[in-house]
Each structure stands twice: as C-alpha cells, then as structure tokens.
Image (cartoon, rainbow, N blue to C red; front, side):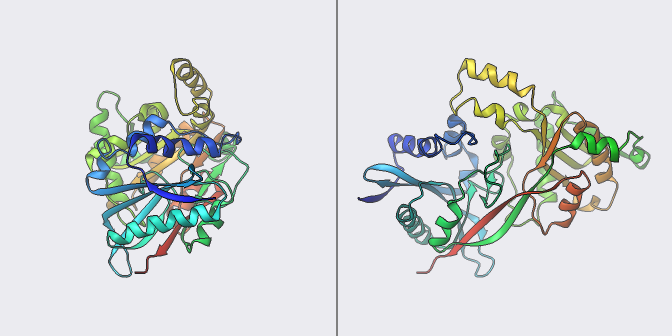
Length: 372
C-alpha cells in the first residue's frame, strides 16, 4: 500500500480533484453535488478575481494511484495571525476517505507549502474564503444540508484532530420549521410606522441590479467590518460571488432600507434550492435544468443569508423596518433557516430568535500552528 501527495498542476489531476467527492458520497442520498462547472471557475485564478490578491495550491493524496483525499491551501496577505502578526494560510475543499494515513500525508504536504510561503498558522475550512461555505459540520448528521451549508461525514472532525488541529471558532445555524404559523401568531399584519421617521424599504431593482449589488456590497463591508476573519470584498469579487444570484434569490428576497434616500441596511435571503440542485447531479443538462426550474417553484424553505446594518444606524429603526418587511415575505414559506451565526454575536442570535429560530447545526473552524 503506497501513498503519494501530488500538487494539482494539470487538467487530468484537476478532474480527479473535482471527481473525488462523487466517489466518496456516491451512496449518500443526502449529499448535494456541487455544480462542477461553477466549482471549476471558483478554483481558477484566471476567472476568480479573489485570487488577484491571493495564491491557491491544490493537493491530491493518492493511495495505490487512486485519489483518497484532497485539499486546497490559500495564502491571502490580508489575513494575519492575531498573536504574532505573521501570515495565516487557509485550507478548504477538504474531502477524504476514512483514512488516517492519507489525511496525515495530505496535511504534511499542505503545511510544508504554507510554511514555505511564510505562514505561521493554517486554519479552515474556507471554501475558499469567508464569503463562501466555511466550517466543518460537528452535529446534525443524518439530516440534509441546506443551501450554502457545509456537509461532511461524522469522521472528518476526528481526522483533523489526529493531525494536530484544534477548534478555534464555533458557528451555528438556526431554524424555525414552522415559520408561517409562528408569524401568524406573533406578527399580525400591522402598519409599519418607520416611514414616519424617514425609513423606506424596497426590494432590489431588476432594472438596476448592478447598482444595487454595489450598494449591497458597500453595506456589507461596513456592517461586518468587525466580524471575525472578515475581509472587505472588492467590486469584482462581489460580482463573481453574485453570479447566478437570481436563480436562488428572486428580487423580492433582497431588501434595502433607505433613510431619507440613503441606503443604510440590507437583508439578503435565498431559497433553499438544495433539493432541486440534488437532481442536477453536479452536471446539468437541458432536461435536468428544466426539472430544476420546476422543482424550484415548489421550494418551501427560506434562508436568511445576511442581515447588514450600517454602524451609524444600528440603534435606529432600520432593523424594525427590515423585520416587518421580511415577516410579510416569510409568511409564504413553511420553514426558515439562517446561514452561520456566531453564538457570541448576541444581536444576530436575538434577531433569529425573534423569528422563532433555535440552534440547529454546529460547525467549527480548525487551526494549527506551523512550527519550523
């Protein structure tokens, strides 16, 4: 039995890198295959503007010549170790068979590369950064993932811990499986008095989507500036991340609050398209695409992707204006979920609780100090 870790340097190895999860999860009915064409673009520095300021290295561990594990390492000079100020490398797209030796060798190669680039810490998973899927699932196994939610077997945490990684942050998703009933009981239809104070809520404009996406980016960068590991997104990065946005977020699911004409808050929600994506099998053709569109019309779960309020309006009426408008939208759905929330972020937790959501799944960010 032989193990070999190789960098992904050609199309043949990239195809093996992309195909490995399909082999690992082929008997798992809950797994949602990623869209291979989209993932290929994400991992291509020629197309993904994020890599204009970051480097990417992909690794494969081969066991007797066959792929057994994979990993990506990202070096972004904007990310620094808070203790020593040195570079922090990120890892992501981790997938592996339940094989301690394959994972050990894979991370040995990744750590050696990260050290050669001056990194003092390796942490993740980030796929490939904070504005994408992040974290390793720790609980809630046996239930399907929602859109934008990591998914992995229960063996992965132990595989990482055996290689010396430790949890440095815990994140959670929150869920209300009966959102319509909750809202009809808790939030009866009533007029929103925010307009009396100069606040107006509007959806994203289909005719001026480029303008409104720039407004959304600007609000997010301001609102999340103090968040753990947050890096401001550039215009091109945000445009790339927003490709296909209309498929998962119809225009009425993205709301802006304006105060005397100035955008001060935004709520971005999406449909849980994962049940429809599962049928695409990662490689959509014309017939599968048609089925996806038909399945999307039957989606009954809404996901709160982000709620962003400018710092100078955090104690104003912007939040209540968003909550009132969103409650009217959420009445159309059966269930509500959130993307990850830090348990220590009390305003976000309480906002989710105000919609009847309770903690659902836990995810972890792991880190390891890289000694010379």
